[in-house]
Image 1 (cartoon, rainbow, N blue to C red):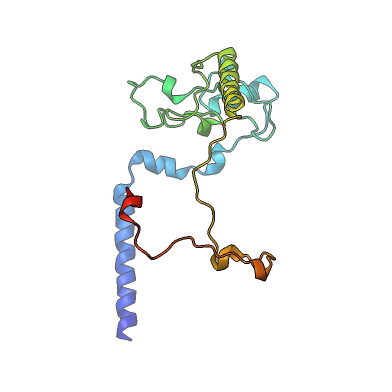
Image 2: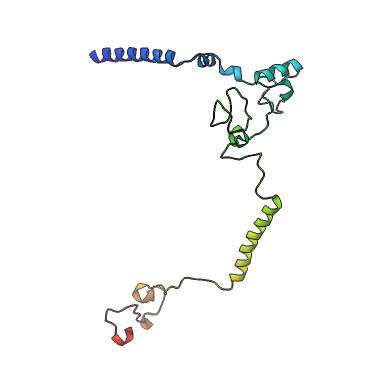
Length: 198
């Protein structure tokens, strides 16, 4: 019973501490932001009239003349934004999220997760032209093909001794005649002659 009473007091004290910490840590900005639901940022239907376009542009913080709708029906009235890599944004601007180089409430491209400072950059020019890339591919594969054709008549194998089998190289097991079985010695235990060693 005493353990149950201690657990209840501990939970009550913990709940009071959590409530106090939540009130102390919430600033006025975060209290306002916490009041909104995620339904407020959910894309609406595609705007058909000028008033609907102006309301959608205001919703996403864009000017009505800059607002274009994506052609996909799955995203709704989400604006068709240009695909700009983070590496092309101003590095000296005071961003709300410096790591992402974006500000709070700024709409992002639907494919923003595939571009980044360390990922694919759609705005960068390639290091090589398409013709150079194709030329390099053909040169590399042509070099391998030429090396194979030139070196094919000269095969290279590691030097090996013949495989040694017990019982006279398995003479009887391979179907040899028992009367003609040779005696094969792969090695001996006698010391080698001094002259033959040299």
